[in-house]
Amino acid sequence: MAVLPDLDRNRIWRWFMRQNSEPCAFTKTDLRAAVDATDSWIDSNASSFNTALPAAFRTNASLTQKTLLFCYVAMRRAGLLKVQEDS
Image (tube, rainbow, N blue to C red; front, side, top):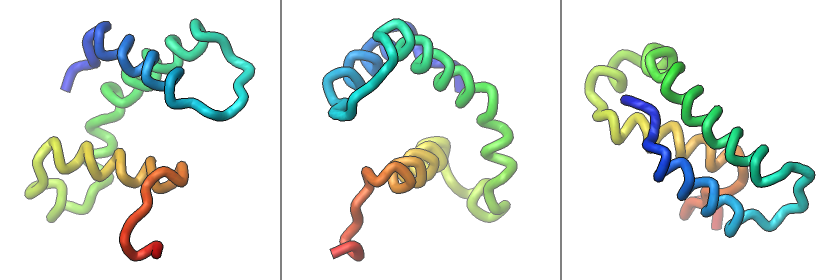
């Protein structure tokens, strides 16, 4: 999977600025560089992530399912993913 087009990176940058409610000591330029770096890192490390997955999942899951798994785990680690069992 290739890196995101500049328009998508820009939309993520703007979305982060609208959603962020925590104080920050970085600039908008710093944030944009971080968006670009994150997207590039994901692209560069996709095969490593895929290799780390158990073979049964790796060979049977779609790219979308693998991406969602990565996102869900990251969101849970950040305290952003709540599930029914949390109630």
